[in-house]
Structure formats: C-alpha cells, structure tokens
Length: 115
Image (tube, rainbow, N blue to C red; front, side):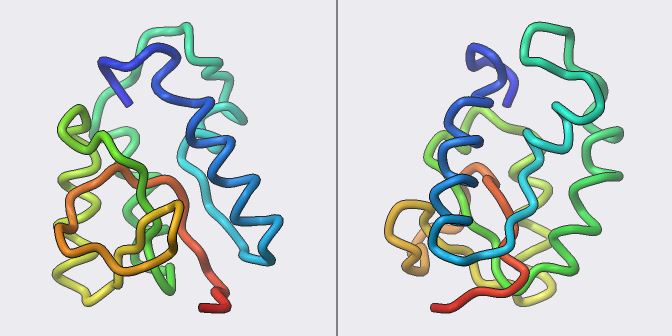
C-alpha cells in the first residue's frame, strides 16, 4: 500500500495469520509481493503489475477481506470495483462482517470461508 511505511506489510501479515488461525485459506497480496522479493523497502512497481496478480485472485475468491486505509490505495479501488461488479462480498478483517461501505484495503482473499 503506497504512502504507508513498508507498504503496510505488517498489517497485511497480521491479518493473514489471524485468518489462517481461524481456518481460512488466504491469498495475501503482501505475501505474494514478499515472495517476489519486495520486502517493503524497495520501490513499488506499477499498479498494472500488481493488478495482473491480484485481480485473478479477486475473481477466484469466495469473499474479499479488507483492512482500513483504502483511501491510500489506488489498487484497492480497482480491486473493489471488480469485486463489486462480479458480486463478491467484502468483509471487515477484524469482525468478518460485511461492510456497509465497500472501499477498504484488500488484505487477503478467503477461498474457503467458514462464516
């Protein structure tokens, strides 16, 4: 997440770990970036680069789980526009309840949720 120290990786990692501990399968964009060598200190690549990775995951997901802070993420706006268009439910990362306002940061995509 541009504009946030370390692209907000610590918050993404914490949320992904918490969701996995609850038994969910999670795709975390931050973990995918880390696998590719991004440690939060290197310059970000283009939004198109990240969307090529993240949007297929949004399409495969059962639900999209989000963190607060969406206003700092261009990519999130794109991901959530796609999620909305294809009818994906968007959940708060802490409560796992549906959001009244859908624009928040994508944390992970639960592929088998138990909600």
